[in-house]
Length: 581
Image (cartoon, rainbow, N blue to C red):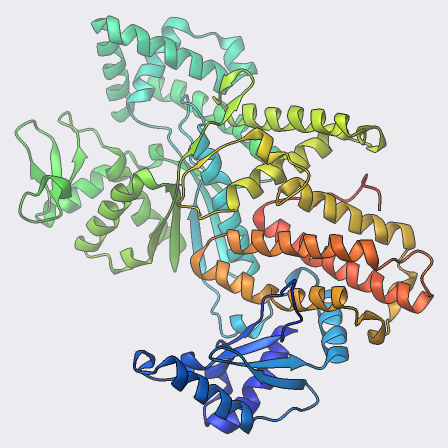
């Protein structure tokens, strides 16, 4: 595997440079493949070795690279050493490259790339990831969908790296909307509708009561009083609220299952209605709480009354706010999980909110506040179903399925499938996730159903099609070939390009683990799929001599395995049947 080759190169470099191999390993990177020419397999950037590298001119760095290359020798691992622009390049013995990479992919299975030396010495950490977090009775908007798939990816990646991950769905299940909802249900609610479609019915009630409250002061007053009863622990009000919450979670679990997402804990703002009062007392005891003329309570983070640095933590009637409950939740989670890192996945509009929450925790004396991290993402515009604006996650999933079924029918593959509905949803979800993950998470983008479902080009449909076709090859030609293979049969340029690309998987995982951006993995998988597509046209298995067929089947099996690994990390379930080889 890449790390074995890296270590071998690092050991030779360490003897020449008099540096420990460990200091050099991360400076040796796999070279991205090129369609124009055959490239080396690894390169060392000389710039990374020089101290005060700003002082060195380009020509000076080039001289250093040439001198270093002259001191190095080829061996059983490295067959060629050359220089590039400020780099020393290493070409690995071709037969050794073929044998090592393919054996490692098969041996490591789902752990391929994760056992790399790039991750060696990585301590196992306790990580909390809070994501999705819809508001009960309000729209499950596109921001919640992005939070769900991004948070799921981060949790998957952290788990794959061996960390202990707790996935939390922090529901918006408290606040004034429940005052409105409690009053609204008494006026407009139907028990049978609540049982059969809780999210839909609570949303309808919420919309209706909002309109009434705007025109009728008595309804608005009644809603305010209902929420006050909740805050004071009134049993009747709490019983109704609990039913709303339980039925909503039941429906959420069913929908998340369709998305392939699970949570270890369904938490919510309601858990912290009492603990938020303790937070207020604690802030007061530390002299951080200030009362305003309006009767609200604030924390001034600037210390000089700067309005942009003021965080309101209590309403004038003494009830808690979103920020107060987030403070209480963070303190509670530290007590419960003793986390090393806690990641919040929300849209970039909440950036200031989390900056204030983390800062307040810090001035309250909680050193672990620096372990809290906000992963913000951009806004998606234009996601509409045929019926109009997206209201619920289920709307999105149903739209994906119906549009994908339509696409499949137009290319006449549906009849070959045992379960076209499930296939449509699985392939459609891949399409949606790849569209979302291709760019920087922080970027806004315009959503397009047509672009999502293109079967050609860099889409999730293309990834699923490639995986299915490679799986079909194995099914068609059986595993009899897979006992052993002759490395000499895989020296064509198409085979070497694939092997070089497989070599880079650990670096791609490492990059995503550093910045939590899925786009590195997406780009890698799309390139791998294109390489596999080109190789499939020329490296035939059918009618080839057994030795050649066996070696090629090994190569395609390795591609499928790595493709599946990457897709699963992104939250995509690879599709295996129904595509022709």
